[in-house]
Length: 375
Image 1 (spheres, rainbow, N blue to C red):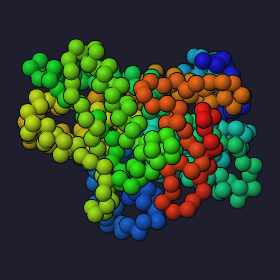
Image 2 (image 1 turned 135 degrees about the vertical axis):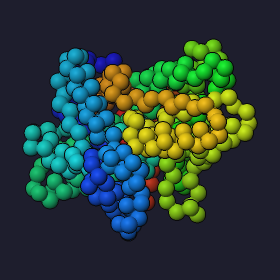
Image 3 (image 1 turned 90 degrees about the vertical axis):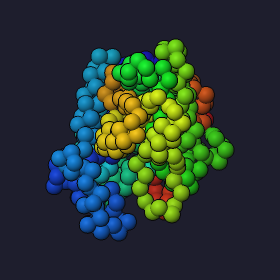
Image 4 (image 1 turned 135 degrees about the horizontal axis):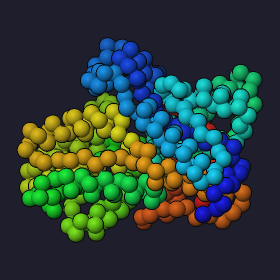
């Protein structure tokens, strides 16, 4: 690992996330931000917002990002990394444009960006880069000198991301009754996306002509399942499944849905299931509602024992992984030969974010997509 004190040429880190409402009055305006340009009526947004209203109109994601921000600042300070950390969101305060403006006015000129999505896809990667481009253009229109911005690589199989999730699966299994624990199945869950988007995700050539979204999740699932079996001494069958589908019903999306999967496992005689949300960095609304509320209710109807393992959240190992990602990229920018720290079968091509990655739905500029330093 490069010198822990040297993040040159970077002078700041931006934690870039999705955002979420923090009260009932925020819910519809937040959803309007998320769906801007799609022509969705306000009445429909109020229906969609019921998930948030069940929890007082508050998404946990902002509080979780504050916890991660604190963990990052503590880790950096403990390791002598003098790099200020800022936080901005795509869809709610603190807004990305406002945060970038603050960073520029604070004198920062070379910024690395960590998006709170570990995988390659349009919505999980390129759309963040499009938002960066829009915000930079807004600052340009204000006459500000634009900083150089680099998005850090995908980190889906970094040990600091994988190992905390492995521990949480072991804990979830231990919480099951003795009679069903050893035979429990693992359902690795992630956000469903249209199959067309999945097929074109990631850099061409890394996995056929795209297909990185599914390949990366399968890589992580294999890693965790293998480690869990080693630690428990039991062979736990597993499958990658999906949740949180939205959009028109005639458009094919990745399947099976977690609730359908629970029905299938119960019918096939599985004694229990542990739901493992590998597609999510924190326990935000889609975990809180789609798994902890909807999927658990379906399992109860089926009489199927289920547990849900935790996401990485602000685990100190995840904060340390982000520090390593910053130093890794900084060393490469200084011309050093650095191999990405990763577990699993997927090599450097699956850590890339080249300019043409994950085709845009409509032609829009995307920032921070220079060819990978690991090519």
